[in-house]
Amino acid sequence: MSIPKIRRSQRGSADELTAAATLDLTKAVDMRYLQQVIGYQRQPSAQAWTWYDNIGEIHYAVSRGARIAGYTKLKPYKLNSNGTIGKEIKGGMEADIVERIQSPYGGVRQLCSRYFTQMKIPADSYLIRCRDEDGEIEGYDFISADEIDLSTLTAAMGASIASGMVASGIDPSTIIRRITTPGGRGGAAITRDVRISDFLGRVWRPSARYIDLADSPMAALQLECELLNLLTLGLKAKMLSRLALNGIFYIPTEISQVRTAMPKGSDTEVTDNEVVNRLITAATYAVTHPDTAEAAIPIFMSGPAQFADALRHIVFDREIYLTDMKLRQELIDRILMGLDVQPQDVRGLGDSSHWSAWAVSDDERRVNINPEIENMCWALTRMVLRAEMAEMGATTGRINNTVLWYDLTDANVKTNLAEDSRQLHDRALISDEAARRMSGVIETDSPSEIEQIRAFGRKNNNPYLATYGMDTQKKFDWDKVAATKPPGPSADSPADPAKVGPGVGDPGSPHPADQKTDTPRKLRPA
Image (tube, rainbow, N blue to C red; front, side, top):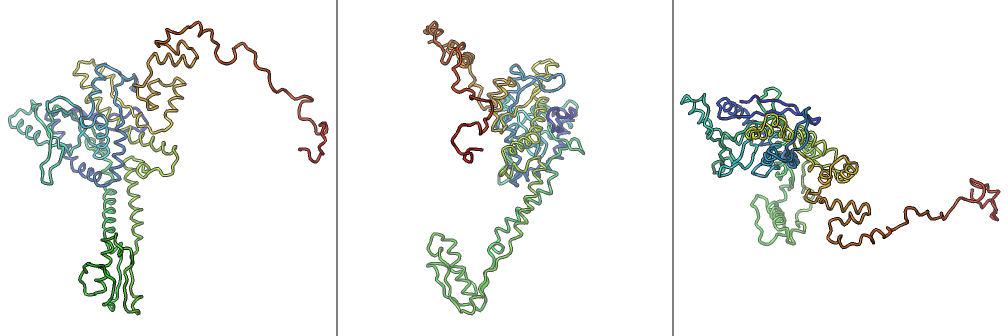
């Protein structure tokens, strides 16, 4: 088994620790490692997935982050001498390999989304190579420990030990089964065969205590998830309780005979009190027949006058609901913070300004999304990109200087990004391609070289360049075009005389005494 290497992120301020181990299941030591790790991880992983499936806030928070991660574009890059990301590699074997890194169940988006979800729930994932029915490679996928059935591999290992061939390893044609649908509900589990040669390795967030165990965020939130689930079930029970919601209609036993207006054809529930029978029938009919006239009018009832005040509707105090809802919201906030999710992303931003909304979204990508995608790129670089480059005969220097990296520009939600791109382009700080991408314009809409020349001609009032490449350009009489004066004054013409000039008399504001006017002093302006 390859020694799991720990690498601290070199980009961004939100550094994460993630481990990746390339596994060769034809070797007994790697197979034993996989069996032992899955044995430890299966139970806590199953519990974490249970909370993800049953608690809507957790499901929404994680799936929302997974959808943002799905905007990732994977590209090969050169590494600079200091280890930072250099220039993008546009072609060659590197670009061809990266183009094939996608999931057969939804492309690059699904591959990134599944990885993000698994790092948030069990924090443990396994990379496999997927093949079609003809055995052709059709992509890659990340699977969890719950999806792996090692029974066939265990049997092969047992046969190898029994024959004394364990030292030579396990037959590479041996398969493991990927569980795509669990058994139960009257049906058997549905599985897909995976060659052990297509089982590439493990990616996980290592525990601070035991390095080979996964540090799942959901494990630390076990108590909060249990309390939230119990609160939800309790609220459901209360809302289904007629006693808690509808109260009690108290009727004294002295009132046993009553005359009421009953709907035609109604059935009466049999009790010892005729008054209760008739009231239940009338109330039930109004609920089950809301479109009838009887449902819109009150129930008429007559009886002894001295007992009229004894009829009471007792409604119980519901203040406990407010306490439950406050406690429930506090638990949700604690769970979201444990998942590195901004609570505002789940509850909504309300009346926040667009600046606050941008700050929350940027912080989510910086802390919650980017580190996970960076770790995925690191694992794919080791297990896929560099491994396939080595198989294709690339030199060691070329392999070590190549890395898979990501582009999350499409996930940017700033509404003024187009204006930012124009400002940066005018200052020659970004390329034409970057300006189009930031403005949401597809690359196929970029102008051709001839169109760029024409645009330059229009901008500089050059008719020759403005019509460059046109068939009609040959029909122009360019001598007449050159003799035609452009609109407006010529460059050497004097300016028009000013229509206004300086005032006549002494400079400055004249004293009122010097002004010749018949207006009385008290009517003059101050």
